[in-house]
Image (tube, rainbow, N blue to C red; front, side, top):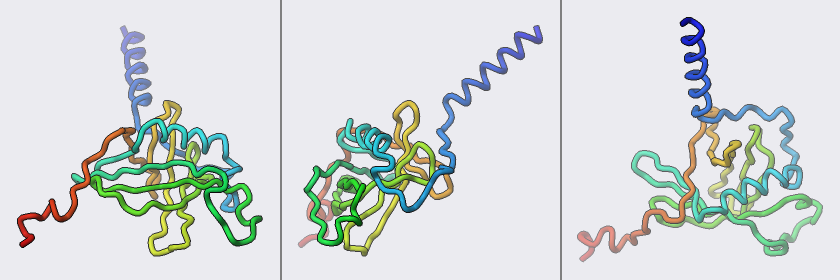
Length: 177
């Protein structure tokens, strides 16, 4: 009887760990000088997974946040500086949406992350008014996550539709005379 109870407890514990949120450990080989080409294989797998749906999104405090991430083709980005500065850098297009309202599309790149099983997406536009970078992780089941500063994660849903953008003139039509 004790063996059956012990076995049941072991199965329960194992099942609990299988369904737990992924934990992204520190990348011991992380180096700030690395570029996209240094993680080309894994980086491409993450970008390919993102591309399997039109948007990746999460909801927080009754607000929907969504991203589109796509690759730029070779030669789409013109760089007028020293070409050696861009060696190994792969560019992506990132657009952010809040409750369906599209915000500015940004030229970005991906680099190795300080976390395992993740890439870091970094804004590359010269317009540094709103710089950003974030860690995008993917687990063994190809589920995508934003990795927060404290190492916790925000799961992302892959969807083909998000909230409809409502123009301000329609949203506040009662206040417009």
